[in-house]
Image 1: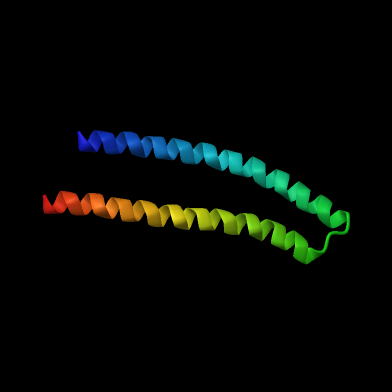
Image 2: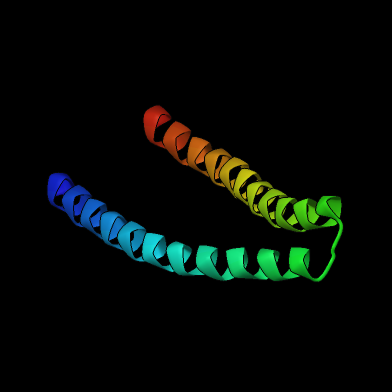
Length: 84
């Protein structure tokens, strides 16, 4: 049963990953166009870099916080299973 559930969840994760990569490609093309337009209109290079880096740093921060929270929760679950 555990192997079956693991296979199903693995398949779902791969499927979601594939879809998110396609969406990322579309987003990347749009952002490239936006950056090009900003530079063409005379935006300072540092401002354009900060625009992109701010978004990246926000996503990294959200990922780190979510990872720490979930790892702490799962640590407690695993400890309760091991000590039972």
